[in-house]
Image 1 (tube, rainbow, N blue to C red):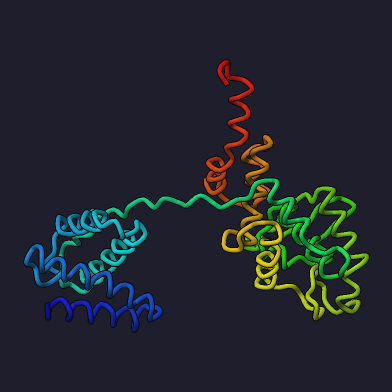
Image 2 (cartoon, rainbow, N blue to C red):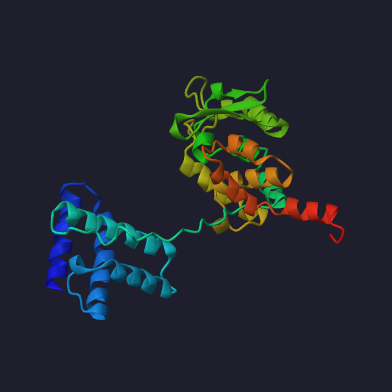
Length: 301
């Protein structure tokens, strides 16, 4: 195993000195490759991973999949570690052939996004106390994120100038500094107007901040603070705090639109997804519309 340790030490040193990777990342590489080196020596009698062949790598990958406790993401990380390890030694001139070239990472199964039913959303939106300025603010924020599907960072970064109540739209700055216009809907526009009229002036001084939504200190709302608010209101709506986040409301926005017949391309534009494949995951969630169409149109529905 000494040869294994020497080759791993040199590789990890290069990651630190040349590539400047974080310590935790380097430790992950070392763990993956050390486990492989131990397995390689025990199963195939090969004491140095630099002597491994492609069949050894493929056999180890199969071994990982036979271990029910190993996730596909862990197997994919090993493939990434191995490819980087062998590419380094090919560049160093110690290997002529990279045995990891034909090693394909496993396909990761994207988890379905968590969503909420329409009744659960209604209960959540009804949870804030409308007799207080903070309650009006929270009500407006919840209504806006559900009506628009904004990311939580887009919601908390909204400025007063980003809202056009006459046109019923907000201007959101998304990933990659891409700006998009998103319809508000009458309900969300109503609660923004009421919040601005009856609550915002009690939370902050005029001109103190350009942020639309502000904290009790009169400062711009943060992502973390809004996360806390969602967790606070969830139990009031009978929703487990562990099963909801601000992003859950974005998922509910997309799912409910599709359930009510919205076109996938339209949902893509509203969510600000650059690729339609990112939006397509919601087609697996939005089953209610399919069930209803089947019941209405199939002779045995």
